[in-house]
Length: 455
Image 1 (cartoon, rainbow, N blue to C red):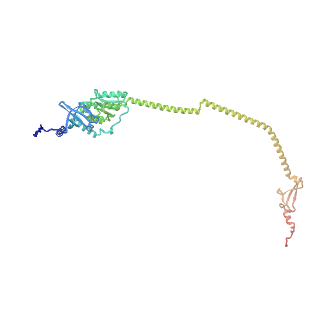
Image 2 (image 1 turned 30 degrees about the vertical axis):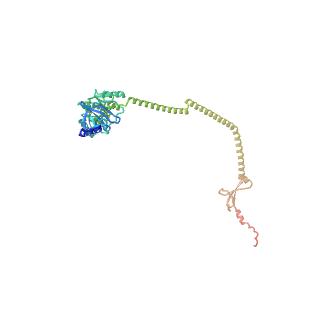
Image 3 (image 1 turned 90 degrees about the vertical axis):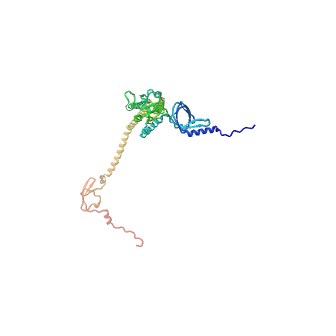
C-alpha cells in the first residue's frame, strides 16, 4: 500500500530551532534595543577572561546578564550580590541554548544618576579652580609625631585604623576628632573636626605630647548616597587648607569622592590609609638593628686599625723603660769614652810636660850656643868692616868741609879744604890738584896698533 501524500492545503510554518532563535533575536533587537533595566544583582561572578556574569532580578522576575571584559574594565566599583543597579545594554538570544540574556554595556548603582551628574559637575568646577593640582600635594612625614583621625565613633573604619596603627606603630599617639560620616549634618561636623586638628598641626597643644603631623579622613564603603557627605564643596575647601598632609581612606578601592581628589594622598581603604602613615615598628627596629650592626662593625674596624697603628708605634718606640735603659747605656758609654779621652789627653800632656822639662833646657842651651856663634860671626864681620882697621893699614878717610865723605877725586878741586882721618887722629889738608883716572887715561899716549895688510 503506497503512502498518501500530505495535503497541499496551507498550514502553520515549520521552523528550524536555530532559525527560530535567530528570528526571535532579530525581533528583540528591532523591538527593544537599546534597553535600560534596573534591578538587584544576584549570582555575580567574574571569569578569568575578565567577563562578568550575573542575574538581574526583582520581585516579579529575573534576567540572565553578561558583561564582557571591555565594558567590565570601565567599572569604577566592584558589583556585589544585593546591589541595586541600573544597566544599559541590549537584549539577545544565546542561540546555542536558546536563553534570553541581557548583554550589559554599562552599569552603575541605581539612583545615582542625578547624584552622579551633580558629582561630575562639582568635580569639574573644583578641578578648574586648582583644588586637585598635583603640585600642591605634599609628601607624607616619615615619622609623624602624632596622627590625627577623623571618622565616626561607631564606624568600622575606626576599629580598622586603630588596630592597624596599634599593630604597626604603637609608639605614635593618635588624636581622634569624631564626626558623623553620613547624613545631612556630616559635612559640617567633618569640617569642624578637621579644623580642630589643624590647630594641633600648627601649634600643638598643652595636652598633647607632640603636634599632629598628618591627618586621616576615613569611613567604610557604601552607596553614592552613603558617601555623599565627602563630595561636599565646603569640606573639599577645608581639606585643601590643611597645614599638614591629609590622607583619605573612604569606602572601597573602587569608590571615589571629591575628598579623595583634594587630599594629599588617597588610600584604597581605611586600613591602607593607616598603613601609609605608619611605617611598621618592626621595620624601624630592623633598621636600627642593621645600623647598630654597621656601627659596631665600623667601630670594630676602626679600633682594629688604631690598635695596629699603636702596635706599630710601640714596636718602633719600644717600652719606655727599655728606651730609658738604652739611653742610660749610651750615656754611660759616652762618659767612659770621655774619661778615657781625658785620661789619654792628660797622659799626653804629662808626657809632653816631662819631655818639655828635659828638652827645654837642652833647647835653651842649644839656642844660646847658636846665638853666641852667630853673634861672634856678626862681631867678626863688624870688626872686618870697622874703618879703624883699614886706617891702621895706612889708609885715610877724607871728608869735605860739609863733612861728606870724599870717595872720588873728581869731587875735589884745587884749593878745597878736606879733613883726613887717620888711625890715631885727623889732619886738615888743602887740595893742590886732583887727577881722576879718566883724566890720566886721556893724558896717556895711545899705543900704536899693527898696520893691517895693504896699509
